Amino acid sequence: MLVTSIGQGLLWAPLVIGVFITFRILDIPDLTTEGSFPLGAAVTISTMLQGRSALVASLLGFLAGCVAGWLTGMLDTKLKMPSLLAGILTMTGLYSVNMHIMGKANIPLMDQTVLTGYLPAGWSVNLQTIVVGAGVTLIVVLGLIWLFQTRLGLSLMATGNNRAMSAANGIYTDRMVIIGYMVSNGCIALSGALIAQSNGYADIGMGIGTIVIGLASVLVGEIFLHGRRMWVRLTGMVLGAIIYRYLLTLAMGLGFPVDDLKILSAIILVIVICLPLLQNKYRTRQQLRRYLNQIGVDEHATNRRFDRTTSPEGLLSRDDK
Image (tube, rainbow, N blue to C red; front, top):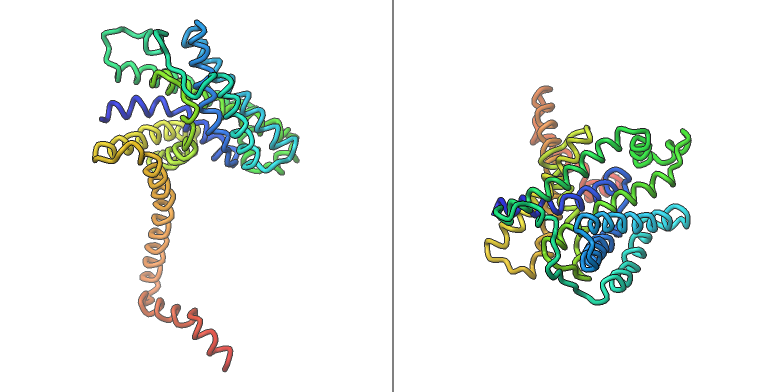
């Protein structure tokens, strides 16, 4: 179970990294994810069926995702659409694009060689999946670490932190946002290409719920591994993808049907959103308790007095007096 989760988590890791770029770096809720993920799968499988190698097909899937991100970025920056609406429009349009690319709702691979087929045949399927997923994810992580150390990457992060201040310092913020969209959706489409090769088919509906999967994995990764350095944050995204897949695999092992995976994803997302809030509330309460103990104030008496002064009845009676 754990080995399978590691392999699948590594295949989903580029998607999680792509969601991380828009959600955390650019501070943009991008719904293009649910269109660019199946786009990468559709382009990759269709290209392989035409006789191209799996490597070339995967690269074309990545480039197709970059084009989808460019379109969303243009709608956001040039036409001044809200980022959420721009993502929805691109996602909706990509449904028809994917149908035209595949010709039908589902296209399977025949005898084409996928990326795992280049590895020794004696290796198990799980080992082949881990090696391919780890190799692709490592390339993505190293490439992004290098990118964010360049002037372009620093400008991209500055744009996400404060777009107005970045523009005042001479950064072409619209260009940075478009590049961020392109890199993000390119990684997401690459993940779709890997998942399609692992499943052996591309399906028009395989992108439904991927934004929930990405967000949940991002938040899980930040809980278990959090830091300021980019390599730590990206490693946390990979770890979050693996842990998230393990949680889903564990739930299926407990008897949950496959049809409930979407609602399980939503429940996990709710938990990982609420958990940091509860942790912060608990830490704040503990700090307040230690402070009151240091100054010799009775915590329970303070709480009772606070409740009396802030109750609606007390406020009304005080105003009446």
